[in-house]
Amino acid sequence: MPATQRMNLPTTLVMVLFHLGAVAALFLFSWSAFFAAVFLYWLCVGQGISMGYHRLLTHRSYKVPRLLEYLFAVCGALTLEGGPISWVATHRIHHQNSDQPGDPHSPRDGAWWAHVGWILYGETNHNNTRVMSKYAPDLARQPFYVWLNNYHWVPMLPLGLLLFAIGGLPMMLWGICLRVVVGLHATWLVNSATHMWGRRRFATRDDSRNNWWVALLTFGEGWHNNHHAHPTSARHGLAWYEFDPTWITIRLLRRLGIAKAVHAARVTSPLPGRETAASSRPAAIGLEPSAVGAGR
Ligand SMILES: [Zn+2]
Ligand SMILES: [Zn+2]
Image (cartoon, rainbow, N blue to C red; front, side):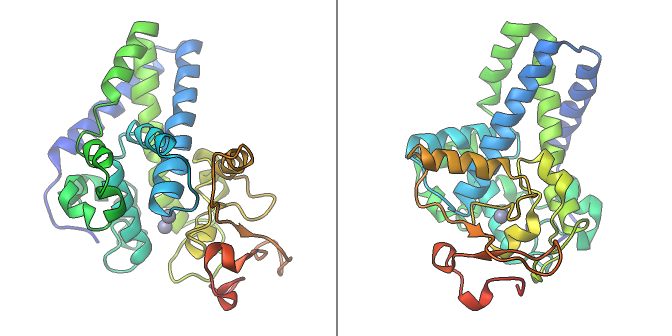
């Protein structure tokens, strides 16, 4: 849905600054800064976006205690991908209109558009809590999410100061700028690459694909064709060779009694070739038995 609007200047400026900071980080390498960035990448992209914004808040594929849910959401905000209400609303609209008119970021409107163009030129409603709340009323009922959506950039400030206090400029540039930029592109690849490149196990109405290298960068989010076929499944990697760290974490939380009501599609029977194999527990994910298998 490319808009003919002018460039969204404040967002573009922030993106340019973070990219410059990311390049600067490469000239200020230290192992402690590197490991801080890796840890924060796991925390913010893995726990914040994949566990939190996506599988928990958007699709409600499992439940955790409210406090942990809020913690995931704060980690999600630390990716600079926007507040939880805006992110969830945008993603629900994507599922509603995948690769059809109305999809905020479809490669049918151009690969660049799907990757980052929609952020720089798209509707500024992405930051409008009131408008986006229509698509995420469940979150908009909770004052914490409304606050976090309005001030999603605030948690970044104490984190930046903390990193600066611990490791000076190198740790701040690695832990904030470089880590945020890599996380943004990894997440954007789910919108661009996994709707263009990879294999399709399910004949979904969209162009979604399963892409192993995007899955590696995003803690399992690259198994995107599986996800479009079974959106409410907390498990995205459905075959043994589809590495899905977020699903491993959710399973661990379930074993510890922290995650409840986990919905999971399950591989139960081999299908022709390596590209078919998913069946599921219909009751668990609310699918009609006829919709289960390779036909969707
Ligand atoms: Zn998609
Ligand atoms: Zn989704």
